[in-house]
Every structure is written in structure tokens, then in C-alpha cells.
Image (cartoon, rainbow, N blue to C red; front, side, top):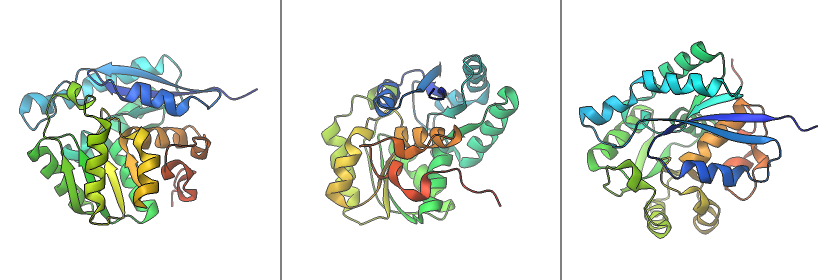
Length: 250
């Protein structure tokens, strides 16, 4: 009998991309399902009202509800630490695990792990965000020792609207960053459906493309002891031999 694996995802309330994309990626994996809990997020900006959406209290309340479903891990399927700093996600993980006794992960900590394990130092950055949010992300990448030789962003603040960005627009932003030949390209936003484009873009550009929705799923599978290479057709991330198991702890 196939082991039943349930992946828990904390989801911004206005996000309409990550649930169907995650379900599509899992469609051929027997016994592995994703389960979502929402909390209020409608605006991405550096305004105090927008930053307050990412207080840990509503996220922890949602995590406790996911624990009722006996999930094997709980992932923060959002990228707020990209502009708030990785320390925010580190604290959140500790709090989720203390509250639920379930392993936790996040999108931005997963990116950091992928870059470290694959030797990425130069990242092309693609997002839907405003100028000042994008600048904060670039600075936070620099603080991690990551250069950003090229970036593109759509200049949007409404979270719901991110999912309305056309695939050809996303692909165009990725191609533009690829011109500087970064080590990898990161599509940072879990409400912008870049994941379905990754396989074709990687074949065209010869550069790894890491989409946030896919990155969260990859890390959730690793946390649940499911081999990521069971996901086929969604990019190098899932096939890379360096990323098949949890990183060894010294």
C-alpha cells in the first residue's frame, strides 16, 4: 500500500495561483496531496498596513488548523521574507514547529537552501512587485552573498492581480534577466504562475529557473521524505541529484 502523505500549505487569502498549480504538479503522485489554510493578505507593499499582514499570529492560527488534518509538514507558501528578511521565516518555522510538533518550511528559506546546495551566486530576479519592494529583495539577496545582475518586476501591489499577469509577460521577464547569464533565475511570488513555463524556458535558455510555487513543493516533499524526482515535467529543480534529500546536518 502506498504511504499516504499530506502536505500542509499556509496560503495568502487572495492567492489563486498556488493551489491549482500545486495540484497539477502532484497530479501523478499517488498518495501525495496538498492541503491549504488561508490567512488575510491582499496587498504587497512596504506600507505599515501591508507589512502588518505578515504578523505571525494569524499564520500560527492557520498552522494549528492544518495540524488537525495530520499533515506531514507545514509550509509557508509565500515570499514575504524576501523583503522582510530571512530571520522572519526562521522565527516562524520555530513557532510553527513548537505549536504543532510538525516539520515546517518556507519559500525563501528553501530558495536559500537551493542556492547553497547548487552553488548559485548570481540570481536573475523576476517578480510582480513595486520598485521599493524589489529593491529591498535585491538588498536582502546581497546580504546573503547573492548578486542580482538582472531583474524585472511588474510594479503591482494588489496580491490578487499577480495571478492575472499573462504567461507571455512572465516569460518575457525571465528572458530579459537571462541576457545577463545569471547562475539561476528566481520567479519570486507564489501568486504568479511561472511554474508551468519553467520546463520550456530552461530548455530555451540553458539556465535553471526556480519558481516559488515549485520551490515550496520541492521543500515540502523533502520534509515529508518523498523523492522530489517523482515530479516529472516541471523543471530541473525536481530532477537535480543534489536536491533529492534533506541537507545533512553537521
